[in-house]
Length: 169
Image (cartoon, rainbow, N blue to C red):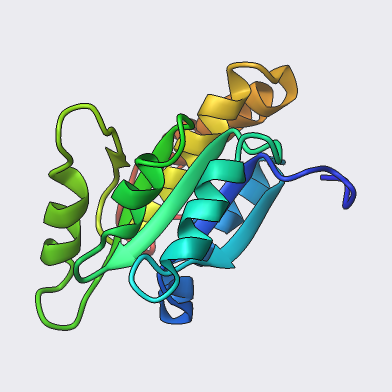
């Protein structure tokens, strides 16, 4: 992806400690050729920044926002309340409840404020990156082709390795 390409997906998280999970969303976006930006935007510590970020996202060229949060996990919902862009929520695993608290906080949005909620942790972040690329791909044939190639590669990996035993190759 060209270095001068404007970001199409925003990947935000409630704190820097969420990066080990959220980097998987960025990795998937980069693999599929979708320019993204990353920021720490805390719903509780920097609410004005959160509102500014969400309200300006579309005019800055973003098409999707991925928001990762742990614990009370208000970030995805608060972002969704401030933009009409699709918001994908990634529950980050918490120490006390293993991310179940985050999942329930993100998934239980009131009717009329939608957040697409993914799985807890790495799988959720990876799939958020993939889903964001699929959304961008609705209007970008190059990204859609990259998603299709990724899916073909996944199928080929399974078909080429049908025997699960480690010494079968």
